[in-house]
Length: 638
Image: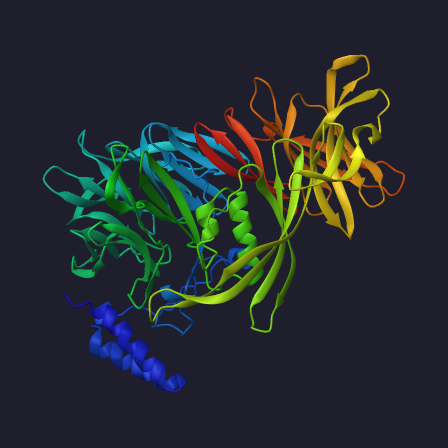
C-alpha cells in the first residue's frame, strides 16, 4: 500500500531543494501540493517542533536534533547516517554478566528490571529497589513520571514519585507479555501478547481500562504523533495507521524502537546462515541509516562445550531502549559461550566527531573502566591485549598535542598504573591519530582513530624491602628516593609501615603522595592512616591529613589538582570502604587543613558487597559498588 503522506513530504522536499529562496513562491507551491495530494480533511496545521531541552543540549553537547516538519519553516535535519554514535563504557567492571534484562535512562537516573529480583533505580549515590518480583521488562513514560513494567502475565504502572503501582493489563496465566511502548500523551500502552494461536499487538487504554487488539505481530513502538506505530510481523517491520488501520511495510528487520521525537528508528537486521544480528538506526522516513553494532563470528559453543570447526555470532540482540531525552540508546547483547552472559551497551548520539585528544583520552578511560571492547573501538587496527590487571590503569593526563608535516595528530599522554601493594608507575605514551572513513558506501563518516601507539618513557616507584621507597627499572633498583626512617613522626604516634603511593610531576617538580599506617604510642590497637607528600627534587616532606579507619589501604588515586585523594580500604570481616581525603594548603611551614568523607556513609541503599575507585575527573570521582551480583558505577562530586 502506497504511503501518500511520505510521498508528499519527499516531493515537497525535492521542490524546496531545487528552487531559489523565494518565500512567496515556496508558499504558493506548498499550497498547490497540499491541494493536489492531500485531501482537505487531512490537512494539518503548520507545525514546528523543536524537541528536547535547550539547556540539556548546551550542558552536554550530546546531540542537537532540529526536527524538520516540511509544512513549517525549513530547519536543518540531521539524517541518521550523519549521526556520530559514541560508544560508552560497559557498566560491568570486568566485562562480567549484567543480570538486568531491561533498562530506562532519564538523564542521571536509570531504572533496571532484574528477573527474580525487581526494579531498581540508580540516582546519584542511591541504588534502591522500587518493586519486588520477577520483573522482565520496563518502559519509562515520556514525562518520566510513570514507569510501566511486566511481572509474568501482568502489566503494572508505577508512579515514580509515590512508588505506588496499579495493574493496567493482564493475560491468562502462562501467557507471556512483552514489548511495552507508551503513547506520547501517556493515555495508552502498546504491548505484545504471545497467545497460543497467534502473537498479537495489543493496546491498554489507561483511562478506560479497555484492552484493544491492534494487529497480528509483535514488538510495537508508537510514533510520537500517537496516530501511528511500527511493529514486527514475520521478519518485516510494518507501519500501522491507528485511525485508518492501513498498513505499510517499513523495512525488513525486527524489534523497531522509535525515538522520543519520532525522528529515528532503532531496529535489528539479521543476515547470513549464522543469523548474525546487528542493530541499525534509520530515519523514520527511510532517507538514510547506519549500522550501530558490528557483530562477528566466533568459535561455536553448545551446552558449555566448544564445537570444533563451527562458528556462531558473538552476540544476539536483547532489549533496546532510548533515553527519555533521545540522546542515548541502550542495547542488551546476549553472549552464549561456555556460559550465558548479558551486557548493557550504551551509545551517545552526537553530531560532531571526537577530537584527536578526546579519542586518546576515552581509549585510556575505557581501560580504567576495565572495558577492553570499548577501548578497541578507538583504534584503526587491532592493538591486541590492552587491559592491565596487575598493575591496572588508574589515571591519565594529556601532555601534548600537535600535527606533523603529514597532517597526522601526535598526542602524548601519561598513563598511570597501580598495584594493590605500594607501587605506582607513569608511562608516557605517544599516539598517532588520523581521520578515517567509516560506514557503508554513500553513508560514510569521518572519524578520528588511533593508528599507532608507542611507549616512550616511564617512571616506576615502589617499596624496597619495606624500609624505603625507590625508583626501579625492569624490576631492578635504579635510585633510592627516601627511607622509612626519614618519614616525620607525629607526636604521640609511631609509624608502622608504608601503604599506598602516587607519583606525578607538578610544575616540573617530582611529587610523591604516600600513606603511612601509624599506631598510638603505648596502644598498638589504636591505628590511623597518615597522608604525606614528598618533594623528590627538594627532598622535603609535607604532612597533609590523617584519618582513622580499620583496615589496610589497597588503592589510592589523587586528582589532577593534587588536593584530593580517594583511598580504598579493605576491612577484615566487612565490605571495603572508600575514604575521600581533601586538604587545603596554608603556605610554607604551615600544616594544611583537611577533611575526610567515607562513601559508605553517603550511599543510600542496602548493604553492598564491594566498593572500589575508578577515576578522578577534576573534582568528580567515579567508583563502582557491587550489590546482589551487579556492579553499579556511580559518581561522587565534592
